[in-house]
Image (cartoon, rainbow, N blue to C red):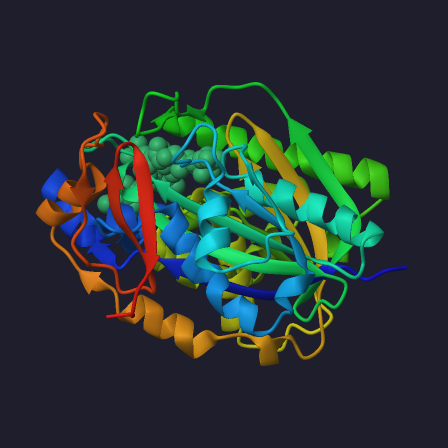
Length: 392
Ligand code: HMG
């Protein structure tokens, strides 16, 4: 049997950061509501010259030093904050990274679930084409109505990973449970920048999808709770995972072990707590955080990973952490990336996140603000122009 899994993974985020205590003060909310109630401390904010393309390219750039570019014949770009109804954002990244012209590029969307669809498609593809690699980029900017109760659950980031038959980090296993249902818990019509969300319903829908996926995986593969050492969740806000896991523990009459089992989730929260929701990238930011921040060696641990995309599709899939995985991580770089973001105040954050979109074809040049190595330089005649730049 061919082993397929994640060979390398990295992430990028916005150059700015908003402390949620500032947002709480601005909205007249108690700070603890965000810190304890939602489990969030900060949110990344993109600079005016950053978007899903620049973050996606920055996340994928370092992966290229460890993989033969000629083997990347597929780039799957998952996003729900698409910049074009027709052209895949991945094509701009393909150019910025100077990938081979014999590499197919396509964009996938199903809310936060897109990257998991990409991973499953890539895994099947690699089984047929084991000599190739698939580059997956999940990149999103979460935007809700300003001053709404969803505002503290925004954020932005991109996670990029290489899928192939020489996995160094985690190997994918066959069992997976799936759940799809047509619901309106969260959606963003084409004419809107900000998503609509029925917040309380979305949290219930997330848990319902998780339980349904669990039933599916149990029925199809006969798996039991005890088969998994750890769970890793999609993280719209970290408390969501705590609630979801609490429900699973209750379903399995494991509440007496709850404290320890919930503590197990903590290392997967470190990055999301400081970045916020990054939609399609969020489950994988949680996975990366788990690998980099678990105090113990995770070698051989069986993971259950839950991906949820509103609307909705849920998938609970399984993976095993591989021996030597820690040699392939970039923990210190990631720590620095988060520490080096520039702190901004409420005024600047609102200006950036809710900047009006140029719709009339006029030219708008962006000042150089990003700390990253790619920038969205300008928009002119409805065309977006990107460039590689020296990191500031
Ligand atoms: P809200 O109405 O402001 O929250 O919205 P709340 O009043 O329910 O309070 C939240 C928690 O804070 C509660 O805890 C309060 O008790 C607690 P809970 O009862 O739930 O355990 N709290 C406090 N705790 C300590 N000290 C205090 C204090 N005050 C209150 N002083 C909501 C919260 C999440 C609904 C809102 O932020 C929202 O709508 N967010 C966006 C939707 C979302 O993230 N949904 C998650 C599931 S759907 C999903 O994951 C998909 C998604 O990623 C999109 C996609 O797929 O593309 C969103």
